[in-house]
Length: 232
Image (cartoon, rainbow, N blue to C red):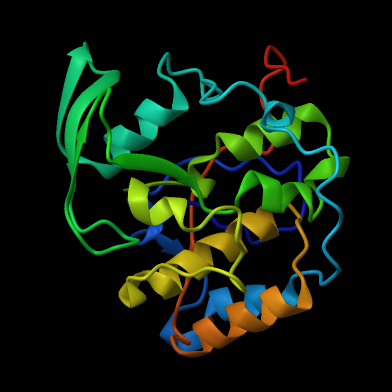
């Protein structure tokens, strides 16, 4: 996962972090917590109407925006699962184990075609639409939908309870993961210059105040998709 310490929405960010809870950037416990500081600095505005939202506005699902010849979904499965097996070469994941799912804390087995694993957009695309993405060009929306910073392999049944909720309306049942989860949402919103509602920012600050050393995740893809990708 990724966090950015600059505001420019065109800044090119490279690299990724498996699961988002490991690699970090910015001040740790000794500097007061980069995640909390970033949450406090996010722009606060009201939620815009959901009018006009459509998943296709963010391009085809799991586009290979990093040009590694694997779809984004398989990239994240390879990153987040253990005991990974492939059905063709080293791209299409056929099996794996999500050990200690971040949202539920339980182990979940992935089998292609009957999966109990979802790839979650940490910041839901509908939520992003209502907080700035409605006004972006297609390239930036496609980038957000496929950025490893904003993607996480999780237990499907737990993920379905989230819907398009933000921090004010949904947190992982696994309390041990709430600080990294909120830090990831902050990192996405900072990188893509999305705003937050007052209630959302208050919820972010409440969670992150309980872990003042929480850092921002680091890594991710550019905020513009290659020109060959298009969205309706």
